[in-house]
Image (cartoon, rainbow, N blue to C red):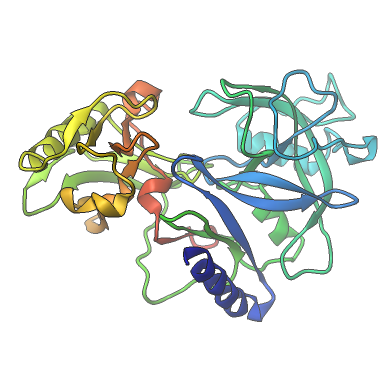
Length: 382
């Protein structure tokens, strides 16, 4: 049922956005749990071959697992991309300079002038990639032409998982050399706008370009000092205003990150959140358990829980308040946007202690919190 609804919505969105021929709409697959990511299918190379790319607004580099040759790698869904020497981007190329600017690394061509190397790109889950910049043909929705776009060939990947659900990363954070910026530079879209809607039932859509809605949406200015992240500035978290639980008395900077399945908050907020949730569950038959390997704050009935729909009535909504200047905007977060039901039949908190994962003072607004919202990033009027 939900797959049909998403397919119909995608068709309507394509007709609306592509009427100007300046937008691109991609169907997303995946979910918050158990897959832990949303991904798009990109057809790359000559001949074109499919690759699954994890959609990540928290990074600016798109890359594939690549045999150049491979030094360390993971098992991926498709045949590994094998570049030709003609695919290499020279170090002096402007695209190489833009990549290093986006990665905040030194652009030095003294060692390998004929290729554009990038050092280890690290992610918050402990995964990392090292590689070289390439350029190849991309197939794009509703387009006959296949533009030549620069992306990373990751030949040395490190991480705990031996087998991955995706072939690489689609980095669409703020930058100058990311995929969306390249599309605009080549005139394939007129507006550097990125948007997505992630369904709580899995799947969704992603779009590039298009006319930005002026009504029916709430716009927030982005903090300029974050060169890659989309950040609305400082936020506070609260559990239902009727209960008057102020979870974070100190506003902290937040970023929207589609590359993170869960949301992360400072340890002070996290501890307050756990206490507040425990209070709301005092009269519930849910019992706290500690048998889930990935998520630490979990509850269950005597019988296994089948879906979030069966248990969301036990939890209260959260509020996420964005502050900019003298103005405030509050986003209501229903229970299905902060809890998940796991394969063990537990309901678990999908907001994690960021201080335990190296986030410091930063709040991460991940996929779970953005579900069922249209989130658009306007890089033209940021």
